Amino acid sequence: MRGIGAALLGAGIMLSGIPVAGALAEPVISQAPPPDVAGVRLVTVAQGFERPWGLAFLPDGSMLVTERPGRLRVVRDGQIDPRPVAGVPPVHAMGQGGLLDVALHPDFARNRTIFLSYAHGNAEANRTRLARGVLDLQAMTLRDVRVIFEVDREKAANAHFGSRILLLPDGTLLLTIGDGGNPPNSLDGRPIREMAQDRANHIGKILRLTEDGTVPADNPFVGQPGVRPEIYTWGNRNNQGIAWDPIRRAVWANEHGSQAGDELNRIERGRNYGWPAVTHSVEYRTGNQIAPARSAPGMADPVLVWMTTTAPSGLAVYTGDRFPAWRGDLFSGGLRSQDVRRIRLDAAGRVVGEEAIRIGRRIRDVRQGPDGFLYLLTDDPQGARILRIEPQ
Ligand SMILES: [Ca+2]
Image 1 (cartoon, rainbow, N blue to C red):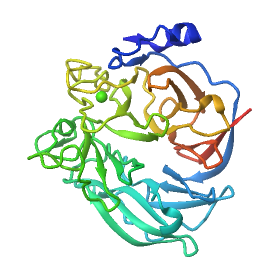
Image 2 (tube, rainbow, N blue to C red):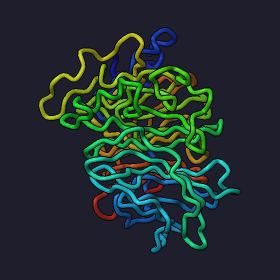
Image 3 (tube, rainbow, N blue to C red):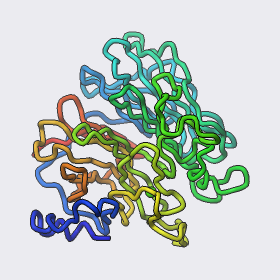
Image 4 (cartoon, helix red, strand yellow):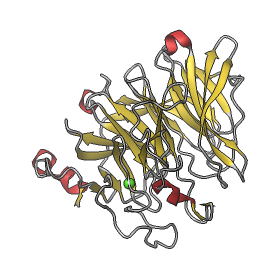
């Protein structure tokens, strides 16, 4: 393993020292907070949300924001419409649960359809659901709401719902499902996180669904006995950022570790991402080992591991014109680190550098706006806001 700090010190010279083909499985280890991104400033676009979670841009530049207690808000010209959108399904708003992500249908301009992910149920029996509906902005109502998917079983406690939605260019979507949390959280008499290594359930997975919530015929495990056909990848702890990379035609996702060991993964169909059989992270508080190894044959290694916990949430691939030097780089939000990490990738998708834009607020979501700026959704207990990153 190598530290990314060393790679950054020497800029281009040391970058050439990063192994190329043949060493792709070896993750870059981020051991310490990286240097600052220079030449940016932050502009507050709107503020006053209550525990916001997901941000989506409408074609006209206005925005949809989910609030975990169960409200869908509309932001126009920096103003939060005082009326939440009516018709949103009832949610289980407790702990990490509630109304979570929002995403637009690829043909939104014509069909006005959006997707919402959320926790459904109660403290003893809950699960992640996905619904779709037609957004009527004149009436501020969601119509024709249908629950199109729910996790195959209920769990107790209120942790790790996952819940990012990513529309793919082929018209299908990915939905991340968390592992249900660390012990003592359990299911069927065993630690619930072990479900991530069992493909007979949806827990601790990234799922691939059609826009109606059904199974695409070309999913990796279709037809395999005892394996849920919605599964796209498995062994995922809790992905709260996922993004399509149009330059490398790849999917990237960040993932919370337990104590330390947060990950950035390149998501490839049918692969096992290891949790909790292999991990760089350790148990909270005790620091005890979770897994005997950090890597194993047949399991996908992360491309980047954060050993200083960022608690990653929100992920964007920058493709805009406002920051030409950033094109093709990843921007990963940090709840705990209260920053946004710029992860520089080469053309093949290898990590070649990391920098930080320090925000001083918990970052829940990161999106590129239609104007080419980067937007952040903060999860401050009070005064949560949308920030825009602009050149200084
Ligand atoms: Ca992993």
